[in-house]
Amino acid sequence: IPLVGELEELSSLEKEYNEDPVYLLKIKDLTSKYKNIRRTRPDGNCFFRAFSYAYLEHLLTDKKEYDKFYEIAKDSKE
Image (cartoon, rainbow, N blue to C red; front, side, top):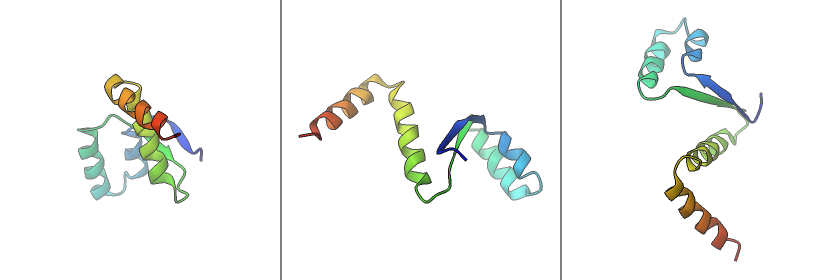
């Protein structure tokens, strides 16, 4: 399993949990809010890696947030 996987349709989870009606309901609820997922290696750091990766992806589309992050990161070197 890679550290961070490729973008997948959220519906890909339905195949994995097709025998579990509770999970299928939860997946249906998630698809109303999200389109895609990225899988992460389940090694104990997966939450931090997923959060960081998602935040960095967000910075690609939000210039104001990127500028704020850049200033904080630049000043942290001092």
